[in-house]
Length: 424
Figure (tube, rainbow, N blue to C red):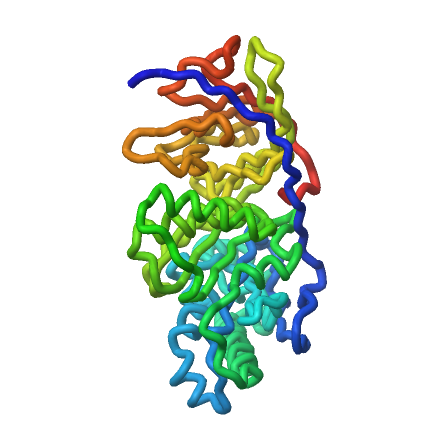
């Protein structure tokens, strides 16, 4: 393959920061009411706290107005089941959709595009297989947490949690006394919600339940991706570098998938899975470790230097989940996929897999890579990093690139330091 040079354009836009309230209150919106919550299982003696929290955003158009539980089950069974796939403590944890004790927040996105309303939040009262082993080893500690220390108490709490989730949906449907308009404004509602997806201790996952995220998508894949990038940038919102799962129609179209993936990318999020039903969604494991670094990317032999932030989130097998390279001087973030090996001293050697990396920003990519000077790192596909003693060193490169800038070498070097209390 012909090797070419990359000339990087200046990055001048400012990335909007986001945050999340500690008290779990709803952001301003129409007809706000106190939401239900169940927080007593967020921390448990001797058990680790999940490093991910999930936001389930329900398009109001997917929650039809009802007057009774029976009518609710008849009209909203699909939406109810999609929510329970991630909030039924026993099944969600058993099938890997959610993590034990993971915080889940239900959010209703009004059809008029006004600010989303939180209707429930809580931490799943469930145990992983590793938790059960710890209970056997420390039965007395756990028995002080649960009344009687029996698994029956966990089962009862899980049933209560499930009931509260369904009750929250039922109450929301009773308030929704009108038939929603023909169009849906989920993205507008997400933007109106402000800064609710970032936290220091966790990484965000957003599950969107909607059949109406697409509008006049070009049939040509490149044009669809270009339109998605433009649409996402116009939303003027930043979704906290979240992992996105979508339950809704349209996932079978390659151009629709390209459009929606690019839209989310421009909003600081990564579309990980999209399916018409929740059972077919691919859910990645929750991270067991989060490390955040700030530093610079530079090209040896040139004056080029760019400030970067890097979020490394690793699962129990040292595979990256919801990890990012973030350019603070730009709206452009790059999802990282790959993994490697970590030692007991905390040092790690990590490499990219065959994922897109910066190619995700190249609308014209196909079977062969394409490169664009205006996009992050020109569209390079590979990276490798070493973590040791609170330092990160590495490089970004591509087998098809012979030189970066006229005087530069064939890669971008990275040097960064671990930072505390960051939320990127």
